[in-house]
Length: 287
Image 1 (cartoon, rainbow, N blue to C red):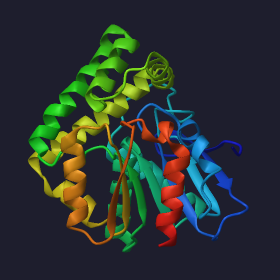
Image 2 (cartoon, rainbow, N blue to C red):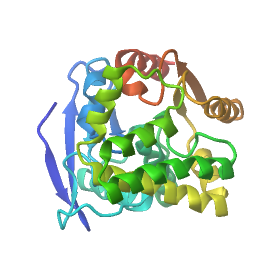
Image 3 (cartoon, helix red, strand yellow):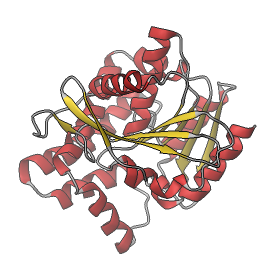
């Protein structure tokens, strides 16, 4: 992985890495966005050697995670909009305008929001790879809001009791209820998410707060999906059946969308099968 760079944004110090793949098939660029609580390098490092399409990969750490901090150096709340605006500032700093996006979980929602924002502002559309993006895991927004209450319990447990292990367990039970609870895998997940637990809790709240907004205005989510024209959507085959059903429903109504469900995987799919996911991405980009 290349060296870490830092950009002073409005209220944050954003860490990012710019990685060159010398044997790429094109000169194109891609922005890679991680999920809640786990930095970009840890999320995508195992996948990079298997990607062969893009020349340049931009891997930032979202504020509150990895090496990105609020300017005060104190853990503080974030929102989907604040995370999106900071990425927009980073992209302007680097003069990036034509690029694809890979987004996992929280990063998938932020990526969708970034794409929608840039479409409205600049008429830009970005080809996207989404791995179980936050907020698309249920068709019914009221059901989605009920699911998010489990994440609210996780974040509250972490901040109010300091019991990070229990908070992470609440999160995993919500996001991957059908996972195979192998002791080593459980311990690895706990270790990943315990690096900056308060930042992780605020990231969970950012998605929960956004979901509460779309309950009042479902068109917010429709806009994100409609503004994304070319999307490769990944799910874990062990994920909830309502998530899989909603993905199929989205894809069946849109010519530019494709859904691949990864056998044996749950919500942790980029950590479980990075090489296989990269191969699917390479193939899709060549179609």
